[in-house]
Figure 1 (tube, one colour):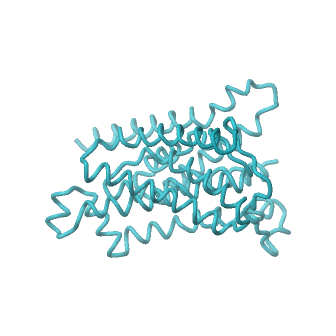
Figure 2: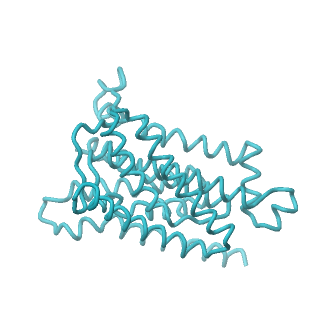
Length: 298
């Protein structure tokens, strides 16, 4: 029982973790991206269309990531070059993406919210030799796909990039503020552009994971607010990749738990709100802790 819950938790953690790491890089570069959900939504649709169209899951992932990256570039250019408010722009992208998806499904497929295509190539799941035969451990860690492993591999890679590479240090300096970055000879606009493109790519992958790995179809509510869970995860982690991963895993556990609880006499509406209620609780505790720490220092 517990091994199945943990296995499901790792699956549900994957899209949140991918988007959260992209959002963390974006925030480090100077832009808080609350439009991750829109990029995940478009990535989910593009990923499904490509997986059904050419039968190549690698092309589907790359196409979904590219679609998210293009959205990220558009978002960054509007914010940095036109000096638009980033919160309003990101919210606008969320609304516009949802509307465009609904219009596309209706006009191209006559579908009302859900698109179920034949011959969708799903992400292959890998069984790990030896590990899969170990009781409990095999059930937890074996049978995951490439994006789950990539998401967790990205955690130490992101930490190393930000702390040990020249590009990572430049990104952190650029995100500290325009005046600071220009004094160091850096271009803060390029840092925002590059980090937002990366965030879009990661969110696109996260969306494709939902459509071609988890469910095998597309629904206009497929992200279920996971872009905002990703936002909460990197706020929970305070720009630290490892703690961001811990936050994403917590949300994944709650998400998996609510799936298991359904059907045990608990109202579905109450069960489905569990991950989002825990987000509020966790962020509230973080805010209280930060305020106490600030008071202690003063």
